[in-house]
Image (cartoon, rainbow over all chains, first blue to last red; front, side, top):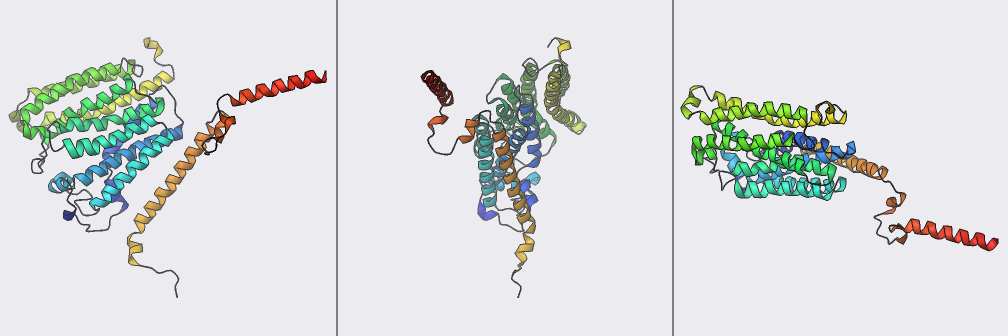
Length: 313
Length: 83
């Protein structure tokens, strides 16, 4: 938990420091998946309302990032990767981060409600609560499955995008949620196998350190198999189609092969080639997620132009 | 004597102040844009009169149809009376 006596402002914060509080790189994924969720929905949305909705979802995600940085300022200062974040670097005070996080959360949820509907706003509010309270405050420091649970917060945006357009939840939006939810653990643990982290110094339980690297390899494959089922299953819903299925089949074979290779390797093999397979699989995992959501978007365009009829879809 | 007093904090915080100003302008633009889109999207003229915290029986569902029917009946009755 943040100890405000440890963090004093050492320089004048600029707009860039406040923007960095919102974790802009995470926001890219949020914006892309929420946009796909919105555009593949069977109900059209006014372009300006769609723009405002995506903006609200992005700001809501950024606000939860600021709240996460406020709470985790103590461990961010210990870990090399996070030591340059705005609070540990002394640019922004914890109180400012808390204020910005709360204010932006409030604005994003209220504006999304006024622009769209109560379900979308409620889902956004729950996502912020889930990431800031359930993940950051409660589970991150108490279980090595933290990344699995944290992944749920990153999985909500396409569901919110879908709710913006349709005002409801359906099998399609649940499967888009499940796709990101199941993808996060193998993606993150592949990274954890080749990046030397200092989570241990900060007393954050990570699977590689609490259960060992062999158990992490087992977990990667164990999450990848149901992920394949979810990804292919999505192809048989109303937003899937022949194009999506072909792309998904290729991406799933590619990623499953990487996860299988990680599973069959020992740490000695991994050290010998400087974690080449782990690094490759991590890169594939990035193509995997963007590929699936990109394919859903292209499939929607093809459907809108009547170009999927040839496959009897 | 200069009316405007300059302080070094003004220069130091110029970037932040400009940023906050632009954000507030963007918020005004968004709320205005949403208002235009929502109002233009109304399909029934009666919806324009909502949310003014005044009881308006004529805005109740079916009120307009009932009023039109009463007017038609009154017109028919008036026509009969003249004949």
